[in-house]
Image (cartoon, rainbow, N blue to C red; front, side, top):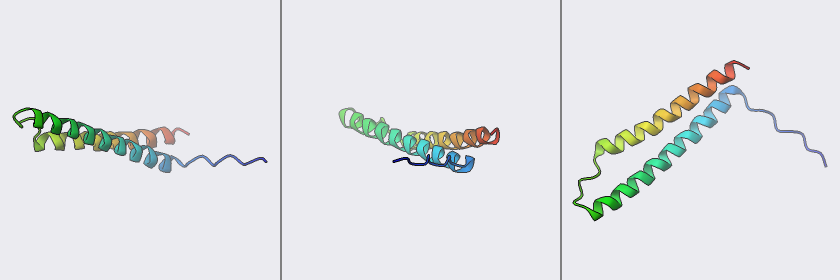
Length: 79
């Protein structure tokens, strides 16, 4: 049985998919870092984690997703 190959995604869809994947990866890393920091807080005096640290980590993940989206869009324009 022969199956036709799946159509290649459009540059816009490919960019969105890559950005979403990168955003989810950033969220996962932020959660893991937060969990590790929470454990460290329990083991120490509790001054390890601040709101600024959480916002910075979350902002980094969002920035990575935006950069991935822009890069994929630019790569799609060359096709």
